Every structure is written in structure tokens, then in C-alpha cells.
Length: 215
Ligand code: ADP
Ligand code: AMP
Image (spheres, protein in one colour):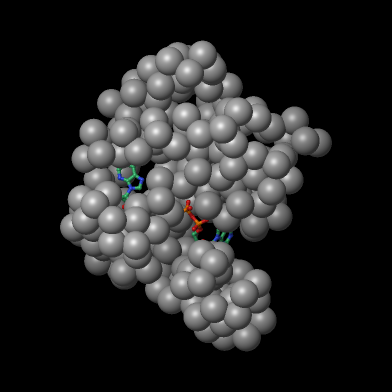
């Protein structure tokens, strides 16, 4: 199944995508993760993305769309994928339609994670990410067994640079209107399913499994 996860930062897309992709045995493609990895490896893509990410701005569409086009052409996406954090603009949504058409495939489902912004500010400011394997935790809602250490690989947990409160507020502002435009776009295409993303991890997971037909 070819799925897009849509929603403001902090709605839980990455956390849920990781679990669902494992269960469905399809790749989880998160554009934010690809950019962070490129920055870590100091590639040209990383250099292009860095200043926008640090400022909480969107990376320009031509950079982002080119990267997604390359990623979706890879063999492992043939059995389906979860695209997380892309599209974020109408131009990206149109580019995705075109990419899928060129590949002779179809986007089947867009899942919108809806949650009030107060919840998102708390989630993003408490988010911690493993510097080794990228696993995501929350100091309060999903803490590791040992503070500061990843349960999975023992790596050090860090706060993302762009999860500091000032940047979080700016990121929400940057994404608010664009996300709503995408909700309207996919509603018109008849592909949108909305979830209440403010509940517990388990509650969201339950709704998600229903949306993709796993229960
Ligand atoms: P996104 O990928 O949408 O930006 P994440 O999956 O990284 O969001 O989640 C943001 C933060 O909120 C993380 O710290 C995560 O552990 C936490 N989180 C995710 N889903 C929930 C939930 N349902 N309830 C409480 N905390 C959550
Ligand atoms: P995320 O990990 O999804 O929170 O994304 C982190 C940052 O990566 C964003 O604030 C943007 O700077 C950049 N980014 C990720 N996905 C996109 C996208 N689809 N379009 C533009 N910028 C993106």
C-alpha cells in the first residue's frame, strides 16, 4: 500500500510510521530523517538543507522533490511505502502525483494526524532522539528505561536543534496553513482519512491499524 502521513510536526507521524512500516514490511521514508542523515554525512544535499532546517523553515521544493523522486524510484518501494513529512506544500503534492504517474503507480491513502497545537508544543519540547539509531522517545510520554540512553542500541539521546521552543513555535506557524491546504487537496481527491492524534500512543495506533485495514 502506498501511504502518506500528513500532519503538523509533533503529531506522532514518525513514531507510528516506524511501527506500522515494520508490521506491513514496507519502507518508512521520512524526508526530515533523510535530510538529517545528509547533514551528518556532510553531503551536498545536507549543505543545501541545513540552514533551512536550523531556522525551522521548509527546504525549497526543488531540492525536496528531487530527493523524493530518487527515493521512490528505488526497488524496495515496489511493495508499498509510508511517506512521512512529504508533501508539505501544494507544489510538493502535485510533484508527488506526477512522480507516481511516471512510475506507473498510485498514491492510495493519506492519513491526517490531527491534534491541538498545545499538545504539539509539549510533545516537541520533550522529544529526544537517539544519536545512534534515530529511535524517538519522549521524556514524559515515552521515556527510555535509563534516562538519556536508547533502549534499542545504547546510543545517547539528544534534543533536536529545531525542537527548542522558539523554533517549534515558528515551525508550527510555517506549516499550519500549508498543512490545511494539503488536507483540502487530498479530501478533494477522496484519499484522506483523519485520526485523532492527541490520544495515547496505543489509541492512535489502534485508529491507524483500522485505517489501513489491519484490524
Ligand atoms: P512527528 O514525526 O509527527 O514530528 P514524532 O513521532 O516524532 O512526531 O512525535 C513527537 C514526540 O511526541 C516524540 O517525543 C514522541 O515520543 C511523542 N509522541 C508521539 N506520539 C505520541 C502520543 N500519542 N502521545 C504522547 N506522546 C507522543
Ligand atoms: P521533520 O523531521 O519532519 O520534523 O522535518 C524537519 C525539517 O526538515 C523541517 O522543519 C524542514 O526544514 C525539513 N523538511 C522535512 N520534510 C520537508 C519537506 N517535505 N519539505 C520541506 N522541508 C522539509
